Length: 142
Length: 142
Image (cartoon, rainbow over all chains, first blue to last red; front, side, top):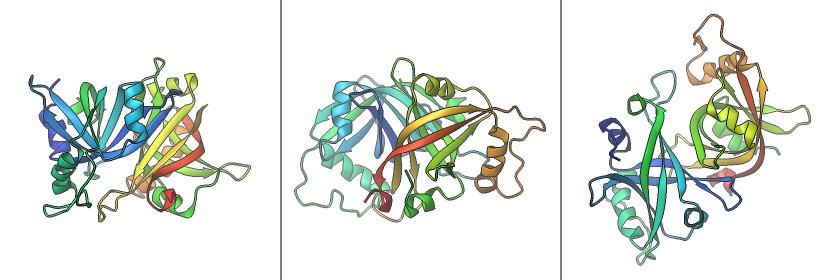
């Protein structure tokens, strides 16, 4: 599916997201990752995130592809902090992590950031998340 | 278990947390809630959160008590945003939501906030989370 303009504006060119995957015993695993919105060849929006190492979340997604994410607004002026929830399914692709991390680091750290910091980073993994449903609290959930 | 001083300082007297519960089909359900740290009669720390209505998360916890939370630091000065992950088990108690929301609203909105906004709020539900494991990125995870 496509993300609406409000959800796109919240994520911008990169955002911190809490990513939930499911452990083999069904319990939730959580971590905070950088995400970006990419457009797939057929015109849908997908979320992408990169991992240099084969973390638990990578194993989890291979075992059960159901994931969820939240992105909190940095606007704390109202009673409740607006947030976007995203539910979908994920797939892991080998390689491509340094390129995506370099792209995201420009937004998340600064234009001249060197991230990954090492000279010869491993290819890592890129997780692609197909968006099935949007929720949360804010204009994207109305 | 007890939370260390760093985790306590991050949560303070109230914080936004992404709360993960498990739907009946095992998929993750997420929402952002206000949490506080309370001390149980036997001296352990637990996290508490209040709900005025019987949301999906309340049903989910009654069905499967495994939960996870993240709290993001508001300190964005480093490369990565520090965050606290908490894994534990939850139980729902009937009543007590307006009192806990009033306590949390002082931190989350302001000392003179009227929240819940209605004159006669329903008793609602309070979820108590027993902490089993701490993770994330920051001094609490070292």
